[in-house]
Length: 113
Image (cartoon, rainbow, N blue to C red; front, side, top):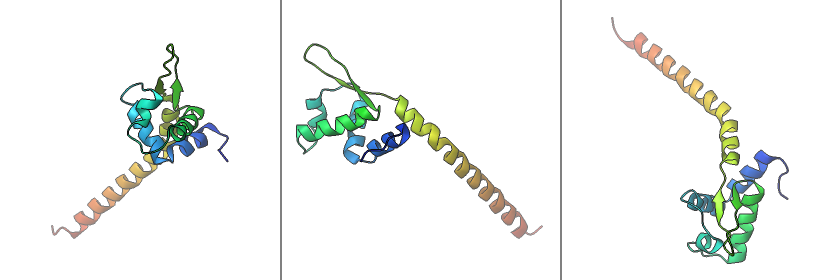
């Protein structure tokens, strides 16, 4: 069962290491299905299934140039994940800042005057 909201679809697609490797390949530029499949030890139909998941999540798109259908990386879905993670990034940065201030305070208390 695939998730129904866009963020969950994106995270579902990113959960698979093969799909992440495909995205890394497409970050270098457009590629055909055969070019994408070349480094993997899995069948073309399996690669096609991964591409469908990535396409459904909005992470890639497929163009048409005569008989050539290049796949390309789409960044909007990744930007949505980054925006979602931003609140957690701020939380952790704030927590580390508070911990740094507390450690500095402890060091000042231990330093003989």
